[in-house]
Length: 240
Image (cartoon, rainbow, N blue to C red):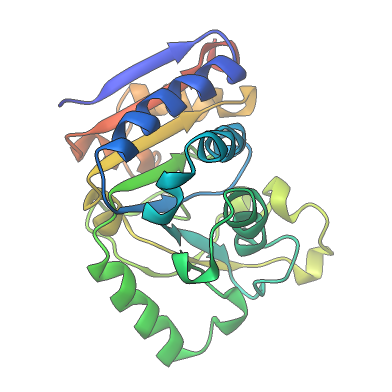
């Protein structure tokens, strides 16, 4: 299947369309390993999955979730962390056990053994589905502009755009992360299926660069075109 672009008139409708594709995919699987991105774009979709699992609870045991990135220095319990987001909007909402989850602890940024072991986990996981959002600067996970298609799980310096991310808005400037931990494009492209959800007027420039195949030095998201099963879901009202 080639890359496909699915549009709907608003955020609610496009999130419902993502769920339709997801419900078909999960029914085919006896086990499904899902990469979880944070942010506002996939948040309604995650809620719809929670509702879906209440209606079809037999699918819950199939699911294993993997956090795709984290702000450097933030612990799992920090309310600004990606892990906290995943616990709230995915693990708790979907009623998953902790042994169905792989978190990234940003407070262990400088623990070389921990980072190495995590890199091995992500190198070997072969995700069935990666749920992705498009960053304001077209980053995917925390793969910043210039990230190559063969980049791997690593610590990465944050761009000024990422340092200003809304997830970090409640933090004192001096405490804000300057680096992150992220899965690489190599691991993302090893996923069986990719869902890229684009929502929010602030994503208009990034989406324009993406659909116009601007170079990866400016628009890292273009690396996703290398994947044979990329599904891009667009809230038309936010990118016109």
